[in-house]
Amino acid sequence: MKFQPHPYHLVEPSPWPLAASIALLTSTVSAVCLFHGYSHGGVILTMGLLAVLSTMGLWWADVIREGTFLGHHTLRVQRGLILGVILFIVSECFFFLSIFWAFFDAALAPTVELGCAWPPAGIQPIDPWEWPLVNTILLLSSGATATWSHHALIAGDRKDALLGLACTLVLALIFTGIQLYEYYEASFTISDGAFGSAFFFGTGMHGLHVLIGTIFLTVCFYRLINYHLTKHHHVGFEGGLLYWHFVDFVWIILYIFFYHFGGGEPPIIKNSPWP
Image 1 (tube, rainbow, N blue to C red):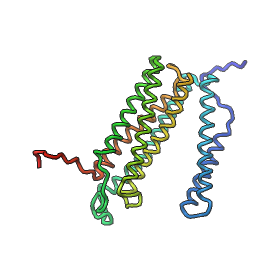
Image 2: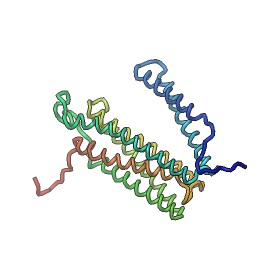
Image 3: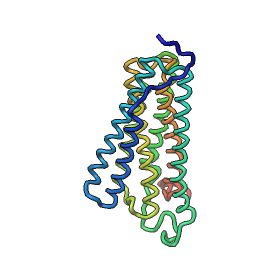
Image 4: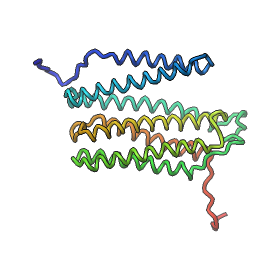
């Protein structure tokens, strides 16, 4: 038996970094071919995306195996993993910053092509006091139930931890369903100028992050059921919570600016004494 004089995990050679690089390169090149109308671009893109998802699943399965069954995730390693998640979220902040930059560049000083108005003439924005408000309540509630689940796990209450996480997943799925219904009922599309492009790209990318976060927390729910997570060892759950709260924060900004500042009209109160 070898003695390890340090708390770090020196990983063994893995095929997944190379596999991920090849899969991502295939997805990128095939997407460009698809956008330019080359034949079989869609088929190759599908294969590339499936390869990316397979690589992610197998790579993370190895990480779970190393931390749960092999005992390689010491406290020092757990701190490093959380730091990695935080740095990843910082990179995501800059990604959404670019989306907001594009939105405000078009909205704060509309050009002549947009009719010097925001939203442009002919665009009927989505009412922020209807489904968007419901989605805001749902997503913020999911953040609260996720925090409840985390605190219950730390306190050793496994039943409440499972219940809180299950509520989070249900709320997330309802949010996604309402978002899809909102897209279906919208009177404009992504091709309707800068307004449509900014709206659908911003909310669509956020919806994709909600979907990724839902998968993240679903894996945590499965691991919690199978006793992989304990009150002292749940770094994967903490990473999922950080990511989910980031998604909540981005939605608040999206709701304020994309729905309200983006042209939503305030609700009309009938029989109001005010003009």
